[in-house]
Length: 473
Ligand code: GLU
View 1 (cartoon, rainbow, N blue to C red):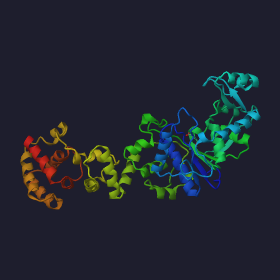
View 2: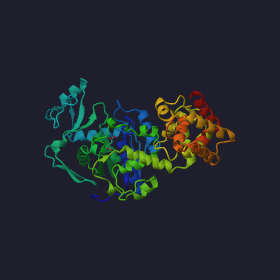
View 3: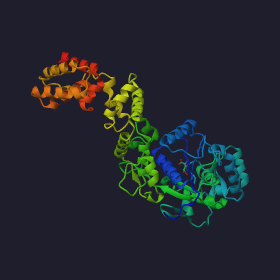
View 4: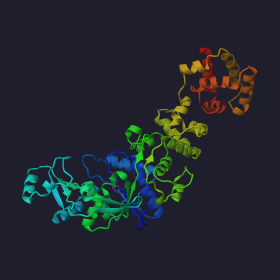
């Protein structure tokens, strides 16, 4: 690290509630949370709802819900409170306004009337408008933005990024950045600096996409006479083609992964490895282990690639490590959500061990165990062709049916040797018969062990599916 960490550590996650929690932002939140937990510091949640046109309370609720689901509980923020509240920027307008007054008094702010998108970097014209002209145009209702006047003779702005080292920006490149809209709503750089200072934030961890904002913020810190926090800018997350992760690459919201059957611990593990290297071969890192190993100086400087296969693999690992009752409850919910209303918890609990080793997401259960709840009839044509066209099958199935009907239940310990013997005596290889049997009972050519599957399906369903095949053959 380029520097040592200021303590006590106070970090914040500062989302704008203009959409759902994005994977990249979740990673930012995670690193903030990890460092706070690790250093015994405070993790602050601040809602940057200063854009009334795009901010929505339902996004705030969803963000908080997703963060909690990930296990990233904040120590201060909306709904839990704290000494530095309120934690909604829309409730802190007076603070920004009083700093704007200071900037105007020192002639470091000016009104800019340029049409949006057309303002020059250094705005010589608007900067020099006379106060009376400005009043006149404002009175006419002309839209204006309040901008910061970058001093002409300012030296280069420098600051240290704990990961990247010292960075340097020329004032000309920084330009007269915007501070506030004429309706009194602050813009990001102003409200961010005012609040990071007011909330005593010691370390700002955010994405590289904000790197060009930091020199602007440093200029504000300098003007206000505040000591800036420390900074870490996290490298971008890239899709598999090397361009920044976006919708084109697939799901980018935490909510999507959540509803697609991913476990929060798996997502947290995955996000941690996107930008951090534990320095060991270990990849499976439950939250406790993650906290144990996490160190800021092992954050990566190079962009990280989002690898869905790795996420699926990790999710599978977490599913295998789960308590079976717990997993059964998750499976049950997935099956209910999929509309299998007669999936009783008892039945789901019974079949859970059959699938614990065979799914990568919780949602996979809906496809893989479908045949327990939906009769797989008629069998797909391609499967029929491939597995059920052998003319000798009906005869051997009749014999198997006879065996199955003769017992009370389908206990594999009893059934399996007898059925296998019967198949071999009939002159078949085992899989020549067992694979067709699987197709008939499940409508699929992959399932858990066929004897366990038969037992779980129950005698009644097995026999009726087999009979139906025989009467159609
Ligand atoms: N509201 C900003 C964002 O969501 C916060 C950036 C920062 O952490 O300073 O990108």
